[in-house]
Image (cartoon, rainbow, N blue to C red; front, side, top):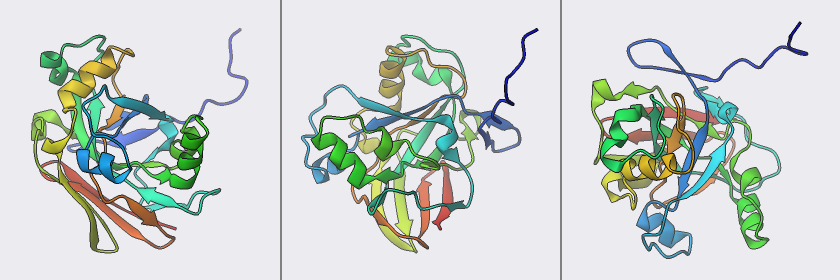
Length: 227
């Protein structure tokens, strides 16, 4: 007889505009995808292949409060447009990338910048700087059937009502179809995969008590507080 030796974890799910829940499968993130952010981090915004990293599915959360993570004195916000995959895709041509997208939301790639910086200097993986618990707050998913496939629109992030980041998703070095096509050539994309598409300039530090709002024009917004 086959049985679980302990109960399986509950799946991570996201609310969908109009009803229903979307199970999260995997989380991919694109680094260095806005020229101004690339420059502020001291890098060259040359159009090289996208840099991908991952977060665990259970790092995704829609909760209104996010606990300040351990082992850091330099927690950073990074507001992003998030793509939600809705169909299987392998080596998807750029022209067909939209066909496998279910919808979009907004998210914050929370980063323990001190841990990430130390890992970079040592030539080590970024995992503990990026992939910690509750490191991927996101909003409600809006299907592409409802909002279309946004190619431009303001992306902004504010902390305690003060705007910290502002850009336009049209400024991304790699567009959403290009990202999906490239990533599907590396891994088999499947329903429930999320892709954080990168952040504009203005990343900075968060403290306990800070209220964060992320919004992408024509998509949605999301608010959370660090506790």
